[in-house]
Length: 114
Figure 1 (cartoon, one colour):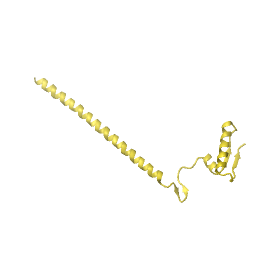
Figure 2 (cartoon, rainbow, N blue to C red):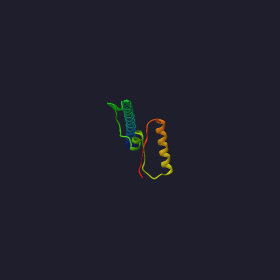
Figure 3 (tube, rainbow, N blue to C red):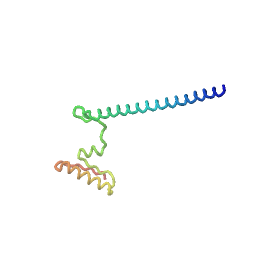
Figure 4 (cartoon, rainbow, N blue to C red):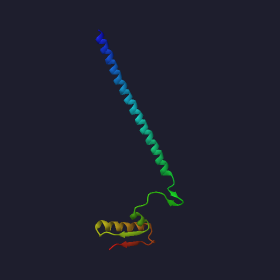
């Protein structure tokens, strides 16, 4: 009788609350996913804009400074500062071949720390 009706009402309320909570969770998950997608799109657009922007200012390159070995090689300087091993020998030869390929007429400066 009356207990069954109360139980049924209580069960319906609990079930409704559970369904409502599940629906709220799903809606929140969808919103989070949409926000993440929008953030990724914004990041991609910013990255593309940055990549397409000129990377020089009044002819000087803008960006992080190059590492020292790259800077030396760009200025046609080969530096030997460690004991000679197979790996060091291969690196020095590779640098000399590259510089010769780039320009056989320009001089190469070699510094040897002995």
